[in-house]
Image (cartoon, rainbow, N blue to C red; front, side, top):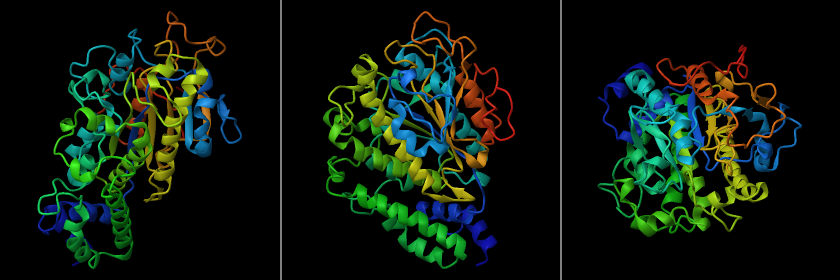
Length: 443
């Protein structure tokens, strides 16, 4: 079968294949198409800005402050944006969580977060975009399943829970239920193997290589998910559930226990990378913890929220762990081949948090940085200070100080436009952040 005929048969659904085989086939055969993805990563409880942001200028030889020291290894992929703030006076954890991806200052009524808006646009064009999910909400240690104030993603005012159990998330994204296969194992690839082998013989060499890359990555993922204990997490046979809100009590806590946190994070990152690489979606929100997160991260003995209300040194002990996880995330995207470079080159990463200074509960100088995005024109390897003149040498943290700086929704709108979206609306945006992009000028 010729490539064009095969592609038409896949698109029309006339070629009988499992959902996973169809998905991977579309991705492999669209390998020459460069698509920009977006990944919004939340980390909890703000920061101490003076020990988070590197000095303005090039990062190549810069010494990173204590909180962001783990990111030094990926300095050439980063753009720090110091002086970004949330609009409005609701200086609370939950208020910041609501604002960070929606741009609304108070009520969530009718609000839609940026990744949901992007997903809507992609879904309307899914015949050409090839996606199977408009957007994905996932994370690590996102508990409080019934408390909607702890969430950052919204669809027309309805909060969306990020799925933090990889044993639930992986089948949802790649294969649905496990009907017809050993219910004690996740075997999405097993059901698709015959179709994939048949498909491989009909593809050209470049597309076959792309398909093989996808299959190899998913094979490793399934082996990890089906391991006896997932490095200390629950046995997979006890927790294959159709809905994330089925997780309650002790099982929920088991997913964010200190001893399993790193392993859960690594697996969730791998699922996210595979999801973006395979073209399941182009837009994702990934939460590390939640506002007022009580998680005790490795290397500490106190909950993250409590540490944020101590001195800078105490808060740093937990913040460096979250930054280390984000560094690993960036490195995995950089190591994944994609059109015209790596998956990181074709992904704009934006980090957000619920607060600026964690101890003062303000919404000034939120710990925001961008990463990747080379093929979208992002100029990385530097730190940019966007604070107003007169504020640069002022210690922020006074709860009565004015916000100053630049509205964070200006950053979000710029990202949406650079990624090719035209229908995203951020209600409080009043400009763009163009000076960190190729051929961009002004703020």
